[in-house]
Amino acid sequence: MKRRTNMVIALTMAGMLALSACGGGSSNNGSTAAPESPPSSTEQPVDLSGKYEPPIEVSAWRYTESTYKYENGDSIGSNIYTKAYQEELGIHLNYKWTVPIEQFEQKMNVSIASGDLPDIMWLTNKQLTDLADNDMLYDLTDLYEQYATPLAKEILQQDQKAFDTAKINGRLMAIPKTASAVDGLPILHVRTDWLEKLSLPEPKTMQDLVDIAKAFVTQDPDGNNQADTIGLGLTKTFLTDNHFGTAGFFAGFHAYPQKWTTDDSGKLVYGSIQPGVKEGLQWLQDMYKEGLLDMEFGVKDRAKVTESVASGKLGMFYGGMSSPGAVIQDNATNDPNAEWKAFALVSADEVKAMPMGKVPVQLYYAVSKKSKHPEAIMKLLNFSMEGFAPDAPADTGFGFSPSGLPVYLYNFIGPEPAMKNLNAHRNVLTALESNDPSSLSSEEKTYYDKIVDHRAGNRENWGQDRIFGTPSSFDVIEQYVDEDNYQLDGFYGGSTPTMVEKFASLQKLEEEVFTNIIMGQSIDSFDKFTEDWMKLGGEQITNEVNEWASKL
Image: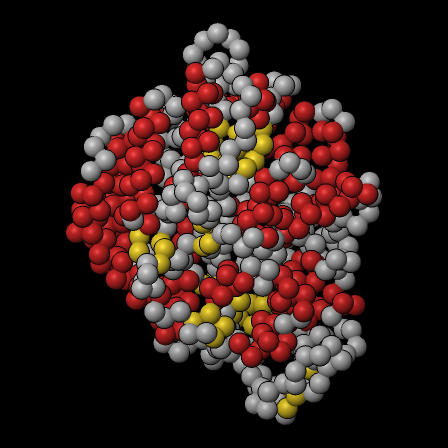
């Protein structure tokens, strides 16, 4: 839930910076002075902590989604946010156009081609790069350094790797719509009541994982005297599925299918054709031969494999932080003796396995170089971020309406703290230890209450405890973060021309070859796949990806 405080009070505190057309002042909070040639063309001083007087108009564009609902005469162009921008900041936000998200990229490209740019734009990474290349964007580096509040900077830069995706040639060309990358890192989930029943140790190596899978299949952990249990769960879309996928497994071989990594020369290379993938496939093939995988994984979707968990037939899988709630909860509800634990990834050698996540920035807020008020984006950013202040009220209407509509979707500038959920885990644990939830946000208090309810005996909230409590998914994610043991996909741009033309068929080929190898086809077919991948468009895609990377 988004949180907002009373911005009239919060943004008019004495000592905030003023941006003036004739030079800069100083601030009691340690910010640097304004530049000699400020970006605003107004002849009146512009107080970044207060309102524009007289008000200004800022043009924009954006997409909407089918989840957007309105009441009381609201619309995307007139709602609690646009009214607050007008009343509290003196900014009239005027959308040149809004379209459903499915039409956004096409509409954006048409507008860019015609040169019809608003003051502030929602952009994908590709459009951000293209516009910056053509010198059509305002460089926000100095504005951000001088006028973004400490709170805004703390939120945006919780994950510096994600924040830096908005930089081109070292300059900040947009404000990234940050979210969490670490929430999506792969985790190994193991049924620990089975470990205890079979006197097995917790997994620390890839060989441990194989040994556990074998015991789960051969030693009747569910006690029904039938050979009906599965060691490691996979779906037919194992290369892309975040539940029952293989991203965490291959990371144990320092390999990253369908992601982009750097080679020794620093060039980006496609992870699926690297040698470590071949080794991982060989292990999966051996496990399949021994019956340690679901023999029908090639035709099962996520729903079918989830049924195996719920019915108590599956003992181990790679998933994400939400798996205890999204996948395992039904098993915990159905079986009062079932217990699972989240583990960090295991490695096939002495080098620690490092998970890889996707860059959690799909959208950027950029400013046209022709904008008369480029500093307005900083007022909007600071305004939005105040809702995440530690002392902000839980909700003053900017999160949900009184009837429960998610009005936070209307927010025009809406980055989120990259470590919000990890910090919620930490705060909830502190509150549980002290038996004092008074300092928790309303969102954190919800997690706290459900965990307390589970520990009082309600198995319906087992999943919440295993996500935000301890032991939990976030125990593992905290380990990744504290050890700085994670990385992000090296390519986060839009589809290159050859990707648009050929990538879908290349991915289909990859899925078919890898599935066939696991099911027994010669491991040497991997080598032919790598050759075919390059010949059928992969080489050109690699060149285009590296051309994109050269502009960062």
